[in-house]
Image (cartoon, rainbow, N blue to C red; front, side, top):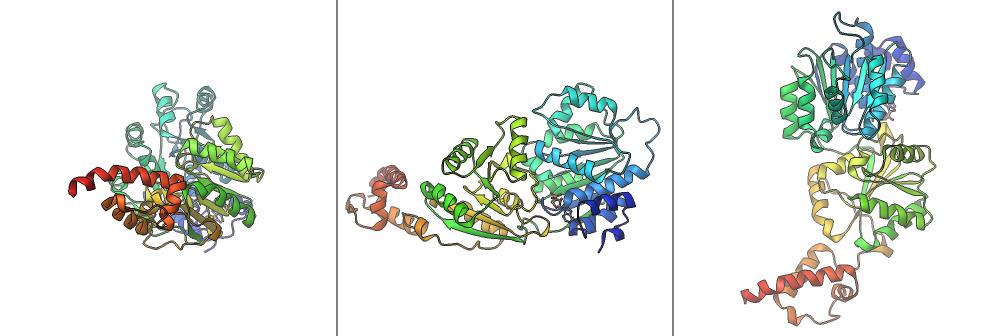
Length: 436
Ligand code: AMP
């Protein structure tokens, strides 16, 4: 279906054509007409599906065709988009400006981590569309620099992330500042019970739109797993980047410290890399992201929170250097690749202690992620089930274990994994001792 059939006005079609979009994505084809009708929407869509344009285009059209209601003081916001992160807020703000280039509507973006005064100035000048993270928006409300009583359209973007990040109370406080009559659009990649509860309280007979099945990964993403020892992950990653001549790779680590360390190690190996996480200043994050987008930075190492909502066109490679603790985060992570119909590859480096996390992810995806062999980087200890068996028998007969009696044990003597094994066995000994 072409864009012209969706009921969008010519100025918006022109802006869309300037972006090179030929046809609407599924979420746009289904979402735009119902949003234009003024209906509430509950949309299940990950980033990469074109969801931002799906709510931004009809929102711009509705605001443009309606007159500012009488009595709404000055130029207070008429549409409010809440996002979980600063980066996503900035990206949505960019989309609003891009798609609304030919319309006489104004917009502003407010988020924390930067000075509040320039934001106050922008709000004072007046905006039609306000894009905000919840915390900073409440700061503005508390200081009287924003009046939300004339909001006609509310968008909760990546609502599941907002709940994961503990924003539910802030969201409820924001809702209390909005007029009762308004259009509500809720976008979420996953449906938890918390999201259902939020949607039930917020939406009035919503149109339900679902472009990917619950919690399934984008189908254009090929996924693979490498089984590898923890201490070999870095070498394997360097090998994959070098051999594959990957030029733009987003790598996920679990901690900020881990992200910094890995970026340093990659740099030492001659691969341009930088870390992005919550401890970095907003300026540093913006600069790093810009370098990664324009191709001057080859590898971006990120934690889950920092990476939420990143919109990088045609990102070809995503690597899970460590698996996330929450299986849904895996879906979010690999949603950074294979965007809007492009092909992408998501690779996970899985060490022995992450096998359970992998199992949880596969259960969520309802599929097994194929394993790719990397002979030179095979784990030096036995695979988990075998190792558990080894440990069990070792715990039962600790003294009978012969040094050098098996491949696993041989390596156990000289590797960090082996040291962990020894510590674990030590802990198990008293228990097995008392059982005898
Ligand atoms: P989103 O899901 O909103 O994060 O969008 C993902 C990416 O898809 C963005 O880089 C958009 O520029 C791009 N995009 C959005 N709509 C279309 C479309 N109809 N055709 C091609 N690309 C699109």
